[in-house]
Amino acid sequence: MPKSTSEVAGVNTTILIAAASLFRRRGVRGTATREIARAAGVLPGSLHYRYATKERLLLAVLERAMVRLTASVERAIATSDDPLTRLRLALRAHLRDLLAADDSVYVLLYEWRALSEPALAEMLATRRRYEELFVRLLEEAMAVLPLRPQVDLFLLRQFVFGAVNQVAMWHPADREPDIEYIADQFFGLVAFGALDIPVEPLPPLPPDPGDVSCD
View 1 (cartoon, rainbow, N blue to C red):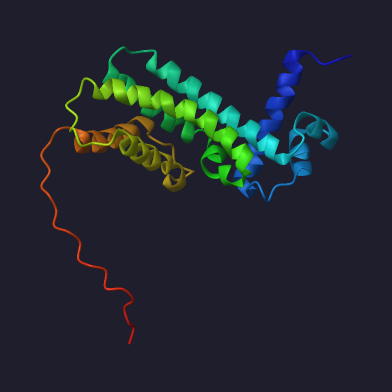
View 2 (cartoon, one colour; view 1 turned 60 degrees about the horizontal axis):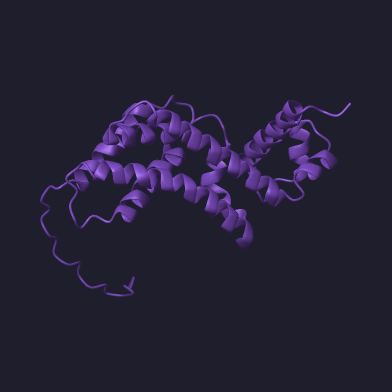
């Protein structure tokens, strides 16, 4: 009897969860597809039928992570109409999913480099849609806040994402994260650096002396 749509979807989810776990622990290059099939409880041929190559499987893992992140942020921001509150809620939701037990988000952050150029282009197109959600939230918040005119919103967004994403690297895995505290601390640090507060100019750096002798 052919499997139902829900059964097929369940098998696919099991495969993606197993793949994400192995990719996170061993890296994409250090993981064989037969190991993924064994962990997921499926035959290698069944895995190959669904995902012809390990790269297609990696792309599916990354797509699943993006879908989960997007849905989580959208649920969070739907609870408020205030632009600043929505931005803070989005930051909390992103951080919560980043530190959750699901390995796919971690793989999204650190294993995308294993993709070939064509596959990378696919992944970046998917990631861009998620980033555009934050761009819109940032622009909505900045429209009602006294932002300094010289602040570059692209660099601000890259700074925030870079700092928040690194939490997955330094936060102790055996300690329960205080998502709200960490997210609010990041927001406070960024906001008070971005709002219209006078900043004294710095003197230029001294010239680089070049190679310094160890003698």
